[in-house]
Amino acid sequence: MRIGILGLGRIGAFHAETLAGLDAVGSLVVADPFADAARAAAERFGAEAADSPEAVLAAGVDGVVVAAATDAHPGLILAAAEAGVPVFCEKPVARTMPEGVEVLKALADHDVPVQIGYNRRFDAGFVAARAAVLGGELGTLHTVRSTTLDPAPPPAAYVAASGGIFRDCSVHDFDIIRWVTGREVSEVYAVGGNRGAAHIREAGDADTTGAVLTLDDGTLAVVSNSRHNARGYDVRMEIHGFEDSIAVGLEDRLPLRSVEPGATFPAGTPHDFFMDRFAAAYRAELTAFTEVVAGTRTSPCTVEDALEAGWIAEACTLSLHEHRPVTIAEVRRG
Image 1 (cartoon, rainbow, N blue to C red):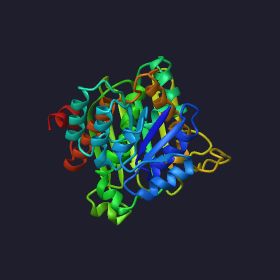
Image 2: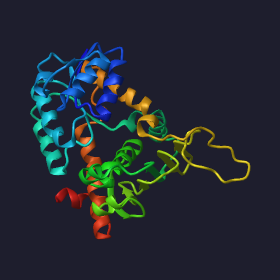
Image 3: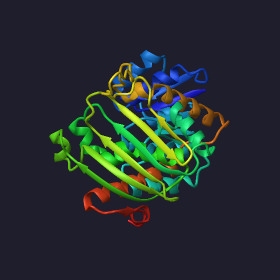
Image 4: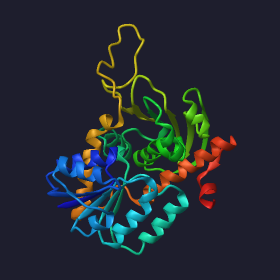
């Protein structure tokens, strides 16, 4: 099949490399606001360079991957839908929740599949965890712990445009908690602080946060995030039930050092980047998109799914700023 790629920054170029290596993909058509980026990608991956998103959509593509700046996501998603082209778009759907809701409403007029990029749904550990939970192996759940710790803060320009740590980073935890447990979040309480980079504080954001999510069946989920984890990129989940407990991310490249006498675990080189930690998941995610394009599966992460994670991020942001519990129903009402 022929796949278009819109946006060739860090993640777009990574997706181009992944797609170029998939058996289902025969050719690529790429575009970026910076023509040099498109030409470089075309040379590197044997792709065809186009001068605009419209040109990509008119080039006979079977599907399109949107890896452009967040502000461009709504327009590009809808342009693909108008052209009848299945679309994969990196999260978020839009910069704000009202914009995301408008995208969802507009898509109701189109029978075009849309997949939003939440790669943890394709990581082998999280897939196994979901199967164990939904298969009843753990019994009734009581506690979930989800962690995302970055090795170093993003630059000031990124932080200023990110919408805050809950919308940018924690939202991956929120999505995977929903997906693994099969439950919805009803209420949150969030706290945060700044112990590191001044540019995060100056942007009105926190560099380290914690949130307690109450799920709709009473299960408690504890989410921990930080921009400062010098040992590496740490993504883990624990799921505790009345019959068993399991963990995702407890492997030899875990960026954690044990001080127990005689302990040798973990023994590997710590993960230091999200593309390293989730390389296989990204490949599985884009493979799934080719199946969506082929019509052999439905979207594994819909716009509705992405917006649900977004509402949790909105509730946590409000909770942090107002120092109180916030229900998801409250932020939905605006």
